[in-house]
Image (tube, rainbow, N blue to C red):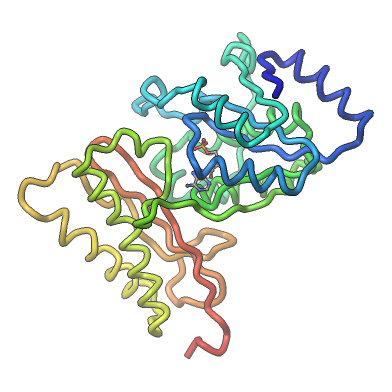
Length: 294
Ligand code: AMP
């Protein structure tokens, strides 16, 4: 496995690959790798001759009050996971290399960035879209593997790839969860045991929403109430950290992320939950067949 730390070395490596003509699979990450990232690397390994993983905690996608400095970093563990999964290249750039002085360009995917995460984190998706555009220009992968865990991010990246004519296929991979359902996330390592139990409420709420739809619920206010109840009946208990609360829980169109009232077609249940100072995301996609819609 080759570790590349500079843009120049990556460009040289990439030019060599042009001569080979192999399909390159690419997994962009912020490190602190876990089995969710592992599943993306494994999927790329199956489908592509060459696998590139990048590890970069992108300062541009963190707001001024967010956890950029505190974000977990574990390059030793990350490199051994990449080695175990037979990645060919790990790109580990420095912030100063990607954002030299007087860097002043950004990429904005307007509509898909507006709601949910974008509303709470106003510069977040611009930061994501800018770094991913740069990384895709450098790596020039045939296929890019992203997790459903960050579904809005997937839609934003898929859109910028389309709009800017980037020559890569964006592949959505399933969310990997712990046995009880909690979506794996680099931030889970901050959770105490009691917080870990509360964090699970997000998945339980989304699952209750999905179950309500399976039983025939077709209006989102009812489904959203069902989901919120699962969380609030626990968070309202005495002794709960007052910072713990629902950020949002909603039913929306799986392509546009616009809220929907009447549930039909492909719907995504999205949620963000604060447990103490930690913010967790999750979502479930629900396909409602035409004949099920009354
Ligand atoms: P991050 O390192 O958090 O920026 O994530 C890098 C990639 O891994 C993104 O495409 C995420 O959606 C994906 N990812 C993170 N957690 C999971 C998970 N639990 N299951 C599947 N993919 C994940």
